[in-house]
Image (cartoon, rainbow, N blue to C red; front, side, top):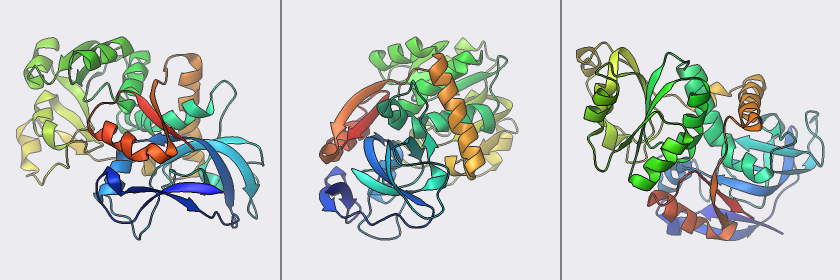
Length: 324
């Protein structure tokens, strides 16, 4: 007997309905997966509300998880029944069992639990491509990371610290600022109490930042552009406060010939080779201890709606998971 969360129409957390489902046998190139842990991410909210529309109803949200392979479809050779695997980026995760394309999962190495893997795949691989590919952060980099006490933020701050970067982090309130500082932020700004542009100017001695990473969106734009050096890069990778509205690209020239990009993880893990490279890099920094995954909340699968309420209410820090 399998169970899943289904969305029959876009809406609030109440749109997440718990239902019994029947899992078909895996087709060619697919595996069946009995899930042991499921990651919860802000992109799940975008799917639920329709900001990122899905092609049909009902659909099952959730874009990362971990579990055990229970059956193989024709032609699958990269994994076997009994392997522990994890994935990110394939919607349908809020389920006790699911089918997956075999070439979109990676084996979980010894020393990493299923719960840790499920909590870090999407957030951790996001941090990896942002810090190592979108902009290659190193010891000479000064960066600004918004919402640094969130799931991606806490991973990214630790990772950036291991790379030797100077990290200016924003967070909402003293408790979240303390988390960002403990993760390794060089400077922490409470955006609820301080004007972050002024504070960035103060802590950098007026030099500002090479790159700004912004998963907030509407509430932090266009002020984030004022935190950049000339020729700096603004990276918009999320819309927690709502999407950035249309703007005149001339603003970028006026503020110092700035660059702006809107990356998505799918591009950076588009092939099995890129997926393996990204995941293995993440596994390595976690196993080394440079990055610790902070699972701060565990919810039953049937309580997915409450997990979304807490996530949207900014009551969560770090990573939260569902357990079937």
